[in-house]
Image (cartoon, rainbow, N blue to C red; front, side, top):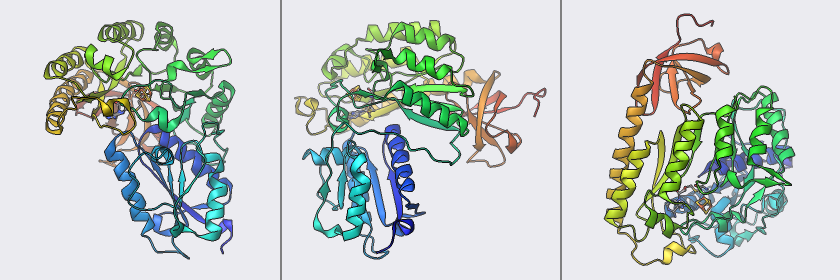
Length: 447
Ligand code: SAM
Ligand code: SF4
């Protein structure tokens, strides 16, 4: 049996930013234990699939990957295949559709503290064919990001809370990720300082509902205030905000804090009170409208993005039309659009009046058309304006150019010296496509 130093691991991440963060946490824990990262799954002793179960398709994709990886015959024996993340948590609770492929370990979101030891034991015995071992999935894990001496990425996530206490009737997150737990403000601040020392300039704070953050009297405003004081942290964003819990004080703070970006992700889900009520979202269309008005008054130039869902059970044609009108009234800078997916174990999956699939698809198509028109119009409005861009690297589509993001999270492509990567530059926008704006550095720019 090989020793740890020659053992390799591979992580595949599916799903949301929280999974991206958790995969980084697991990657660092494996490295800390002496494992090496494999370039491809075929070269790994351990393969981890960090899965998402928010929609049925995402869950099916995770099982398909498990099935693929458990069929690999490679290094001595087969790789040890581990199912992590939300699908693993649901499988531990007996929910989900895990009939295809058999991972050696099922490690839900609350089991990462015991995962390394379980992998170690699994590798010693290589019991891949023996049926999955379900790790204890409790929400009390430490989730501390291990320190490494690698340079930090220019943009990074920091998790400020885990789990969720809201009970939106369609959502698996509270059962998969457990109740809301806030991370200590000291831990968050320490991680921000460390990231910035390693080169990070843009941080996104993560939580299912950042607005309900609470740590020994400190609330979300205190988190933002702490981030404002981190020297060298140029940009701060956060996701997701809950329209029920967002406050005027937070909006006002964003408006005056220099490093908190004019970019709000405020998931609406539906622009119709009847649907919002059935979803248990806890706000009305009018409350959302007022929030947007306040945000626009307090944060000049704010870009508001959102999540929208079509085909929630009971959503009538009239309800959908009302939603569509509201979406066009607000004018979102960007929207993640979803077809409602019935998830076993959630209240909405048992509601009568499930909407037929063809109608859901039609509604999604119309919503996308509406949103694309708004996104295009907002892009055109940038033309002629000068924006501040954090230069991230070469433009993937045209490597002769550089690309980066505005404070409002728009991608910008422009010509410039690669030495500018990692710095803030001014770019005058000359044209705009749907996802990328194109521009030139003003003639009087220094570099
Ligand atoms: N906590 C965040 C919030 O409250 O907005 C979002 C978490 S969820 C992982 C991301 C998005 O997935 C949600 O905003 C919702 O639009 C979508 N979503 C969640 N459950 C869904 C379901 N059953 N079917 C379709 N979309 C869903
Ligand atoms: Fe899911 Fe609602 Fe919690 Fe967001 S707030 S994670 S949609 S239950």
